[in-house]
Length: 280
Image 1 (cartoon, rainbow, N blue to C red):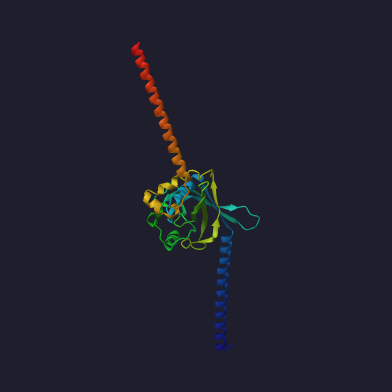
Image 2 (spheres, rainbow, N blue to C red; image 1 turned 180 degrees about the horizontal axis):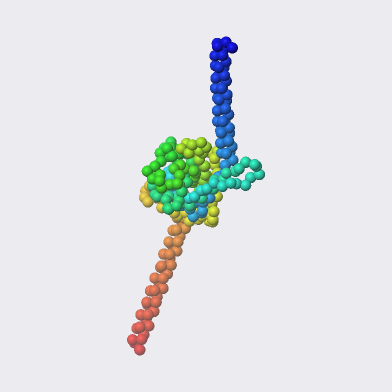
């Protein structure tokens, strides 16, 4: 074989090997991508919270004044388990139980795992600002200096609680909207995001008449009567509660006057009996 032809053959073999290597690498990465997508699509999330724990957020949102908002930390426990499915693929279920809701900066109890954040807002719709979004995505985390206190440094859940501005004049009840969004971190735990495509149901356990005691608690957020009068949602409010209170005060005053008259008659009767006893 001619040396020139041998050189050309070697070059073709090298190019062929490089081409086969590129094809194998692409097949590997594409198969990894499809497997990851399948795992993400086959994942299910279940979030549980007790009525007592959820009532903390209810009282908080009803105590807000105007279009204000607050952020809280969610603590509890979570685990992955295999779910029951008719398909041949394995269904991974993320079970999370929220046991503690704390304001930002408060350390959790021993053994509690950091689950995510709760964003509470007085009026809807629940729109997050740019700073809130950065914070809730962990890009502006206030707990970086205390990351050793948590089992995970990234949020798993985002709980949005919003109170409706309209209240029923007959019952005095408020409409409350809440939703849970699961974070997405398919390839790197340091890169995750929240999207409305990952909304999961929130199961509130033992929630029996939990809103009945929060109408009076909502007034605790207003300490200055003058500020209370300037707020828009206090204008033209139903005066059913005020009329009932004034009526109760009037009844108490009438009862007090009747008691005073009764005591006066008893005093006069005692004085008359004493005078008759002395005369005899």
